[in-house]
Amino acid sequence: MENRKVSIPDLHAMKAKGEKIVMHTAYNHWQAQMAEEAGADTILVGDSVGMVEHGFSSTVPVTMEMMLLHCSAVVRGAKRPFIIGDMPFLSYEVSPEEAVRNAGRLIKEAGVDAVKLEGGRSRRDTISAIVRAGIPVVGHVGLTPQSATQLGGFKVQGKDRERARQVLEDAVSVQEAGACMVVLECIPTPLARLITERLSIPTIGIGAGPFCDGQVLVFHDLLGIFNSFKPKFVKRYLNGRETLVEALSRYTQEVRSQTFPEDQHGFSMDASDLEGL
Ligand code: KIV
Image 1 (cartoon, rainbow, N blue to C red):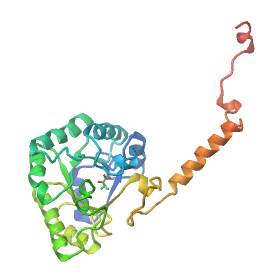
Image 2: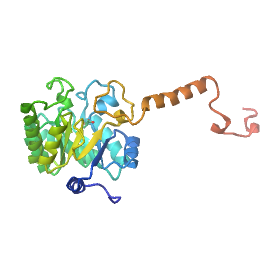
Image 3: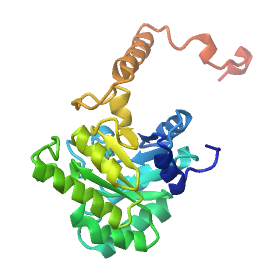
Image 4: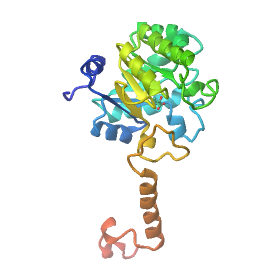
């Protein structure tokens, strides 16, 4: 793909050609720059920010103000990837009108290319209203972390026939409502494969096996930085926490042992200019 911004037709063309779509998450300027350098097609500013950057135990406390701040930093950091801003809990559930207003803020104030919201059949009208307002929407079905308590915790969804049918219907609803893409989180591989074959919009999997049109992993998970827990579907490509703590410890030790800073890290001046001060 050329160096211009990735568009929705580009992502749909990738599905048609069987080219995998790579989605990264990023929450600030430098993470977005690194995701772009690593070749991301699309970047999600997930509400996972609440857990990986703010230390909350779930995504529920995340606010619109937090998302606006993180999304705008990411938009300044990455030019080519298609950037998606997550709608936080209670920013789209109260009414479709309020959902349109909040989605509009992420587009107008933060500059993202699309918004993402959780839920299937129950969010049909909300997704339609946002799309009718001219704002691209990415759906999210399967395990929907904002309602994890109702789902019985962070666990695999759609494992029996009836629940699998519900996840499939959720995905179809999201597409019929006008979403341009859908995240499938934590569902069995064969179900994700079937949904991917049934839908014309791209599916992006996380804990949904290899047959989705694309994949997403949280930045802190894939770099081994987040260590509160490690879901089964996470692959760590770096022992990031250990590597970073090791560098920080070296700095700590060098300050204590007075081996940092060295001459090369300081600035000189003529001794005569200090005389008489
Ligand atoms: O918030 C997030 O990072 C997400 C991904 C896990 C899909 O929604």
